[in-house]
Length: 159
Image (cartoon, rainbow, N blue to C red; front, top):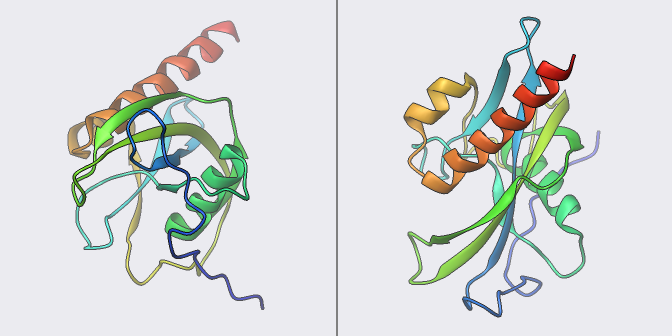
């Protein structure tokens, strides 16, 4: 059995020339239920509360796509296929006095692991879009989710 370990440190972090803050990449892990509705996977913060999507620093030795998949694996214990970029947002770090750039991708989940690097510090929960829209405190993440919902609705109407 291979042991998965989360990356740590800031040596390889990318920083925005526009804001000076970190460039953060994340994803919205999702499945499509039998009824065609989206179900999304949310995680808690490391302090154990809140509702958010996996995200973290984009490092110099990886593509954005790789970073999104790495964060999903480290923080939520899922693997999957990323879709095209949902968009990017500027947001204020709650821990540091900086403005970050956050890029979000959809991640169609193909594998849910029983063990993952941050399983002792984060909870993961499958939720409906409505539950996340009501429970996520981060406006930029709710906007990214709305982008995914709109994209999914267009695909469904084309069927």
